[in-house]
Image 1 (cartoon, rainbow, N blue to C red):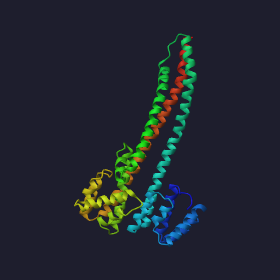
Image 2: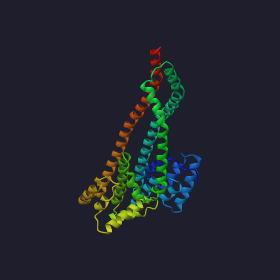
Image 3: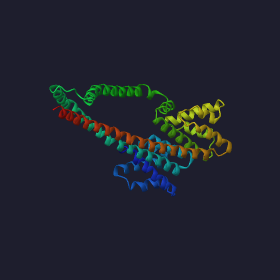
Image 4: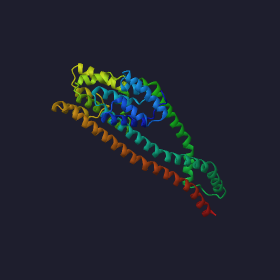
Length: 342
């Protein structure tokens, strides 16, 4: 196989595959058509994939061999089970593309401020190590007391090493916790812990709820029972989270719990999900209720991400602005004070 496909390239390839499938193309023909627009190294991957298709391998296993994201592979797995391959692949790919676009925006949002912070840090070091000592010496020679701003800069410079050490120590502790503890926690409990992280946890909860409800809606629309749908979750060997979740829910149902009550035990989902399930079971339209709710969760996820970006950007630039103003004051105030003392 060739080099690993970037996430955006994976999603775009699958989205175009879904579009061709929706127009009546067989899967092999869709792959062949798309291969004309790919780089040479990708064409070799498609050639091997076509060979695997003809040998009877399911698409999700082929994508797994290509190193596609587990999230996309899992979408394809479920789509193969409920038969709406084209629609599900397009929707899954679009969601991954939106998330990648949000990530790139955050990256761009952080790159320029990070450059300014580094540059300001260099200037701060220059002022604190070279300029301010000279001002302090002049103040002493002229019998003038250093102004409060210079004292603040000197105090900050003594705190910076301590703050840097704390940040490094926190990063090391987090990494050690991930390696020694988090990786060994069962997948469902991992997700529950992630949803407890402030701010980000709410976004994670919306994503997990969208993923679970959308996959169930397709499976129910295909005529499967609750047990049948959860069995497909359990048999998803490409995603440990789906497999464990399906197995746990089946065990709860076998113990006599209702489906909505069983879901209520999982705090990684939105609180409304059990009520949506209960309502859908009563009116006999569970697949439609779950589908509409999954779209609602996706819309909420996008809106909250957009709001978060609108908050982060002004905060970053305000912080940078304060640093730059502080540097100007660190230079200008001592000069004014010296001029007044002459």
